Length: 127
Image (cartoon, rainbow, N blue to C red; front, side, top):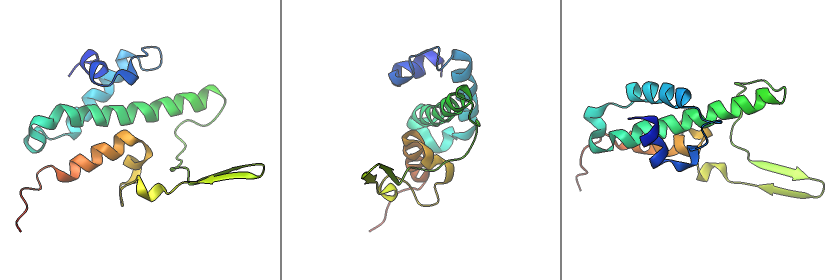
């Protein structure tokens, strides 16, 4: 897996200023160690890419926080509600997260990764 292949499959990460090749390569390497090819089979590359995308989004959040004087790495969960003046909105975060998904629930890529990871090596279903 190369940064070029990753960017082809996930064009939303084409911005090399925001997502430099060095960062993409770093997270591809980390992700390759987290995705067991024997279990993932033909979906190994997809698992590596989803894991990489998850980590890149978290890293971008940290960079953005640091650029405005915030604290990078500060943990925040999914936003459940927001109010501005007399207008408020609330979201059912449980509908888009996985129970016991931990930090994988912090991005849609993490949720997709964990959804697939839970299926890998599960075997067939007997009725």
